[in-house]
Image (cartoon, rainbow, N blue to C red; front, top):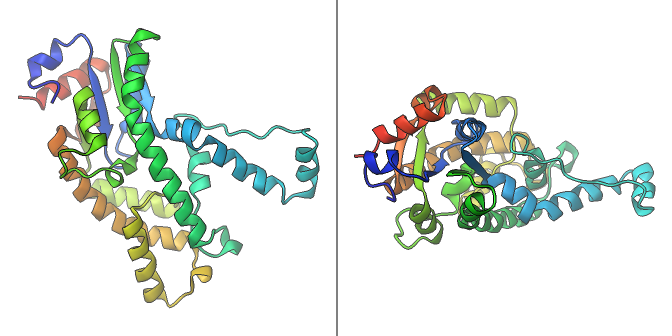
Length: 283
């Protein structure tokens, strides 16, 4: 680790961390708090994915839908309207909307083949955005003069890395530049995530092999054909399997850094409290 002990972290002129864990565990909340202190540059991996790498795909999808409406189609063809994504750190809906949900088109689903294609695009974009962290560390200091840096990773980082591979290009780069911090949730936290997901099921990224396994198991269990699948029901069903799989992967990733609980992180409501919390987890 770039900070081998608490003293090296506390005395560092430039503190750099990468927060990882399930979506909803506080990564963005903490990053926003640190940015608000005026001393930290906040690099959002999901924002980078949605703007730099998938922005054109997202807007093209908006246009594709607009072309289905005669009134909008005419305006679009005449260059009378401008369609853009209003994606922000706090609102990533344009990105998740593009990923979509597989299943019955009448219920807002997309064909599984198209879903796989978009998932593959997201995987490439996420890896690229994670590797861009090094570029933004340099920008944060050289251009914006921020002394400290926080990388707010997406919840699916564990799906695009291999923690057991010491040569993993993403983890090798991140660990050479930042301190990796896992925000670990409890069983109760995961149950709450599942409850919130049931209420508002959102598109997710899955490893290709797990997506296929989920698809096969769900179709066998329900007896449905692909085009009959209720998109929300499928992703709710898949999310519970995802929670278990991701927990194991985050646990493996924790060997590359330190671990704090979601409760501890929620209580670190100031830059000073965050600094002390991290120090308490180092030798």
